[in-house]
Length: 400
Image (tube, rainbow, N blue to C red; front, top):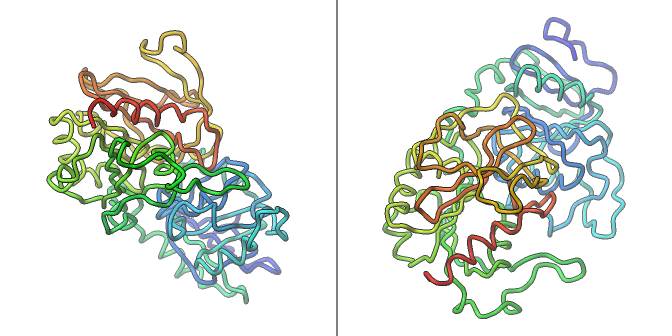
């Protein structure tokens, strides 16, 4: 890492990361040319880079992968979580190699270029990760020029001018804009792809879940289908009257990017009315955070966030019978968290992170409403927590 007062590019450098504090990190660019500004975070998953890049929760972020060999299995059409990539770019240790996987359809660097996303290889990602852990997630500009020509002063000014994620409502930018029945299938199986809906039991016999899309991953909808639900997806700013007109048996609150307090300006009043109506609710990540806000808790910006497919979460709170204290290995992606110190008496804490003790799950006392901070749909990651979809959908049968 070098600083702005010593901007000489090393030989062969075609990529650059300029942090708002003036730190300059050189590398070899790949993917799309140009520049993008956002927050630099790190992800510790060893697999699933394509799912990460297309997860809407990464809007406004540049992802540093701690696993050195990213891109080595190529890309394919099945492993995407949204219509478009939402992460701004990625930073990796090793150069992108030729794909080596029978499911590969396109090299990762080619896919990145076609999707308009910038990558940098040849970076000491361990050093960058340590910097994020010690100093917090920085604002930065990532840029790629095949000729290696960069206006560092201009890039630095751009990084310093970016306001950051705090106070930013990104859900309305990444949400779908049409209400639609989820018809893209259920769980994926090797050799079979995604289970077509006609192979599943008739949707008329399934409890109807309305899923509010704050930036949802597709695999969440697939898991709701797998658990037995018929799913209608609605945009982030859908009104309470429009939701109730769909006659849901339950409402799902999705993951998404940005500051939950900002998105909550329009989402929380709707969630509060759903709670007043005793509507069964299940929230994941941003949805979990806004459920907590609706019940009177507060959220905070985290120092470095939790992102990876290997985060231990413990069941707590006394409501687990013989599984009390059991640890689930989970997939996570969040830079904000519910502040445990602000939980009112109406909220029961059900899960906590074993990394830092932060809140990872709640239930609203006296309501059929719960949420988790992590991603039980995985994609990528372990599938220890599918039971949460079964808990939600299974509790709707008598009320649908």
